[in-house]
Amino acid sequence: MRRAGLKSAPNSTLWPEGGTYVWLGEELRIVTEWLGKADVRRYLAIDKGRRFYSCPHCLDECDKNNWEYVRGVAQLASKDRTETTLRCVACGFDSTVKREKCRDPECKGNVLWPENDNYCLTCRNWY
Ligand SMILES: [Zn+2]
Ligand SMILES: [Zn+2]
Image (cartoon, rainbow, N blue to C red; front, side, top):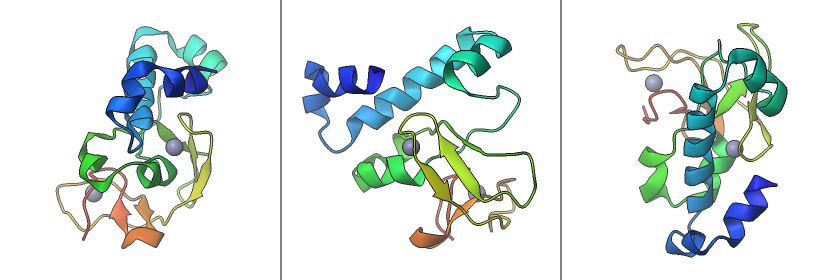
């Protein structure tokens, strides 16, 4: 619903290269911070206790120059350490990720985007 609204909003033309997803991601993050844990789970299917990752599909929709601004709202489908399904609340797509530690020693991420040179969906860097 909200997605369709944003797409038709006048400001979406300012950022035609997938700016909608940037907005939507930001909005969802703000809403998640405002709402309580139970509401977030009920209305958005987001688990506040879990980490957010960037979503490959949302990034695909965006101009690469904007990637650093895309703070994703995707979460792994389960708490299993071998879980490879990343579910995005913004676009509604599931992506298959690779569970391998990011090569940046500073980054605790272990969710990589295999189709994109193992782009780290936590720190959003290529290694
Ligand atoms: Zn997405
Ligand atoms: Zn990383």
